Image (cartoon, rainbow, N blue to C red; front, side, top):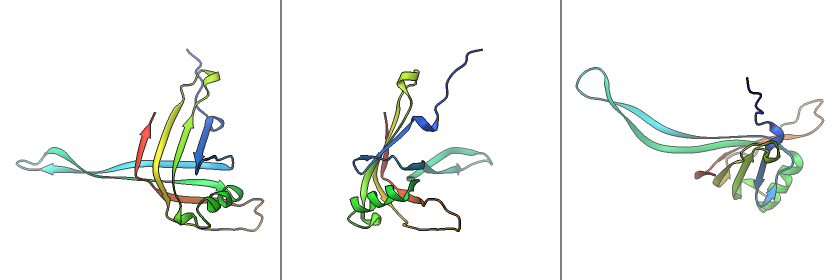
Length: 135
């Protein structure tokens, strides 16, 4: 049995709007593609047809990071268009660094929620993007 080290949250780094995001609480992004079975003669599909790809995600930030992002967008994050560089891995621990570049990120919502007992503000911002490059 080999004891291998897995990637962990401490190995994640995100750069957005030209700066390292230190108040990062979470990041999630996905690429989806429309797919449909093509039926013809018989009752089994002949092939799978492919359609449009969509790119979306969300990032969760502390309020201070949100304010810096808002300032980078000229006061409104919904007007901001940026790239997000997400990388993970720790080369000093023998990990291979994996980097994803999300191109043309634009946020689709700017929401605020406070609850009794909150010790800090956390904001989850959904976004769309144009393409993903992996390195």
